[in-house]
Image (cartoon, rainbow, N blue to C red):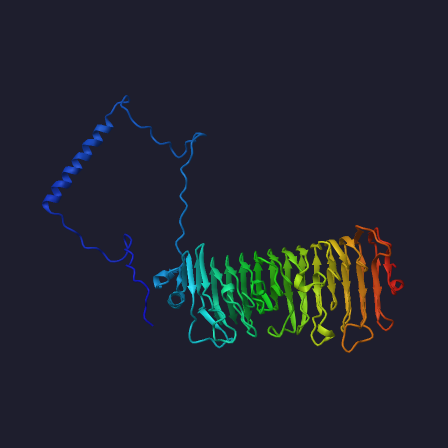
Length: 553
């Protein structure tokens, strides 16, 4: 490969190092001039030393131990200007004029340099790397190498040209970055504009439109990155395993099902992970208008994955959790969703029913959920934490959750109807405590069962402002077999406790019920306890055909 990098002169050696310089010999004329100069300096020194006190002089600067006056203002310390981190892509011919296809020049920069710097400008991307990758049936503009760093200035934008994403002849269309079996890659400060309005998906076409796709990659970091307007299914997809993936302080705007005119795209989620040790922190996912189809925020399908301190808007749902066919885990472990804001979401955190394994260790804490209906899903109830039933009762797919905590969250229903702000069905140990639930019509907490029973659930210390019954109880304990195909007579449950909660019905209604207990005779249900709750303005604290079988009832 021809080295196209610019040649820079070698730095001069500092004193005492490097090659010795030959001694230079002065001419007689030079020696005379030097002598005269020395004499002038000596005479000047004598004159200064003999000046009297009355001679005008400038005040000597204070010693280091002198105390400066209160009015003295120290000179400002100059702020060092950081040097660009990496080789300037313009050195390789990139223009940033928004008209020239800069993809070939940037590919040359990435091929030659480990650290690449992107100055401010609009860099049009209108061609793909060749030969085409075989990882997935898709084209990529750039292929990254291990140890690669891309650092961009503010207002540095890569924009996909009109028609280049959907005009790709690859089955899944065009994408930007590929990180195939690499390690130690960082992209920071860059904006990727996938130009969805100029790349609308046609009928019958699968377009991925990824900003970054990784396969078996290690230690990948996106920091202060913005990705916008993909017409495809995702911005960031991490598959094939891998670990150490970090998406920090980044923004993802619009995509897939929120691009006007892109109605042939029926599904979208901003990020999808099957790796281990994944952190999504300080991220914003937002849409200019409510999506017209499924629009997820972050999908967590691997172990030790977390979404923290982030804001996700206008999503259905905000977060998916659960092993799937691509992660192929028997048990997904240690998932955290903490300190986030989920605003105007139809679903908050969803445990996907189409799973392949179980989940051990889930922490959903200190989040704010603002629930809102979606026009495209008219009539669907809003839900905050939802362990969905499998489609058509097909329990071939399931997730049994153990070690689950839902605590310290705020759920705001906006007066919308819900069949369970928190809705669980396949749980073997869970604590739901210290949550604030307000302005919800319908059921606040729904606990159902499954062919694997429901056990070890504590619902305690929650503060509930119930907007209205909607003809349903605030808390529903329902353990029957009607949700499976073929229908089973009953599911079983044990060790379920509802205690220490405060429930206020804001607009009292007749025949209202706080806790409803329902299960058939064939169900084996034991140790269900409801006691010590502060229930106000509700006709019946406990109701349902099994109210008499509940301890404390």
